[in-house]
Image 1 (cartoon, rainbow, N blue to C red):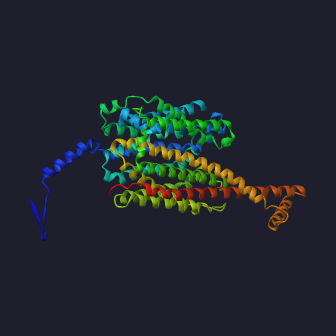
Image 2: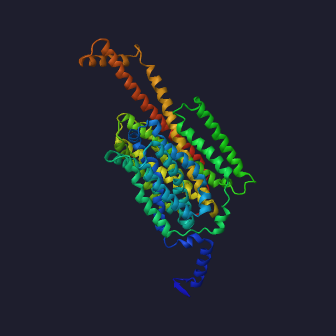
Image 3: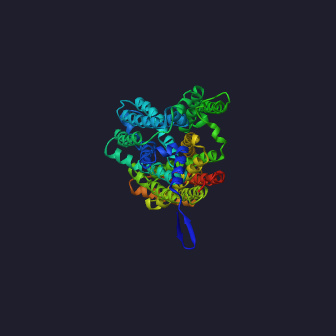
Length: 542
């Protein structure tokens, strides 16, 4: 059969050829064939599962002071509500690939969604802080699968040429939800109670669980599950000790002056020894069923993507932390207004993800990643010139650039990583990418928190050096404030003391502003350094 087309003859393919090709493709990609009918509905369900996890890490922070008052705990004690979740989450993230293979992705994912929702409800009904922390540990273990296993499912059910668009759509939940969560959390705390924060995840979890359980067809077989039936007990124990100790040090190090505290030093040694022993054991030829497949790090495309994910986590969490400190301690924003100020992050990310979804098959993923990192670097550097007169109009552009860059860099990195892996390695790769991002966030908060404290002391000491009788500006300010105090009823030494108190407050404010600006500029330099890693990525075929 042929059709005349000008001077050319176009031969239409025989229908039987297409049928044979489709049949061959379905045999080689059984998961794609089994889920072709409902894969977009499954995508929606997986986005909901990701939203559950990423909202959890940011929406609860605004409620911690109210929880402390209700439960009769100190702020330091109630911080364990977040720390316990992160400890459990980091330990289970590397094991998600093995668990999903052992029990099947469908069973594992739906179980984790249900356990996540139930443990949140139990947190709301807990009579004491100890029970809240217990259920947060359970919640962290279940939450580990809601992103890593979900991404592995997406790689499994969508063809490679659609991964850019699919991962971009999935990334909307990853990047937009954390930006909206503080605003939502602030509104809930202002109008209701901290318990209500734990309720809002339940309807999302029910919908996600229903869609996954009814529409997703797991391509795993009894044989593949039996292959992962042996438990690597030594690996699990070393993983828990190593990563759990590391996460604890990152969370609590600043509070106890890092290595000036004997317990932080001991736990750091435990972390180093535990992680080193875990790596040796997981790579050992005598370990026939490792709980974490570290051999995939022989793939340059994966380890470079994990490093970039780690740096994006450091930068994004660092910016969020420094910005929240700045707007609350310097600008005096309420939690509700802080959430409003964070909206440009989500807006910028949403715009970039839509662009990435359209052009991912046309543009080299390394170029998209580099553009995203440059946008993050520019936005962070612009934030480094803030002052006490900075308003919402001044922060929309820099925050929007940071969000735009994060969305534009994160998804191409994931697509490039998955394209360099074998289908059997995608679950392991997804877990390692998630672990890199989570540890990057923990390192970012720890680094920026310590840096702000140290730079605050440095800038305060520097400013105080200029407060002397030989400094004409200081003396004029001092005399003016003293005169003002005398007009308000102070006399003699009392007026001078009050003036010095005001000057001390001004110095403390300026030191805090300079410290936060230094932190933003440090984050910008981190993004600049991560640009060098882009050249190590392997670009997928377009």
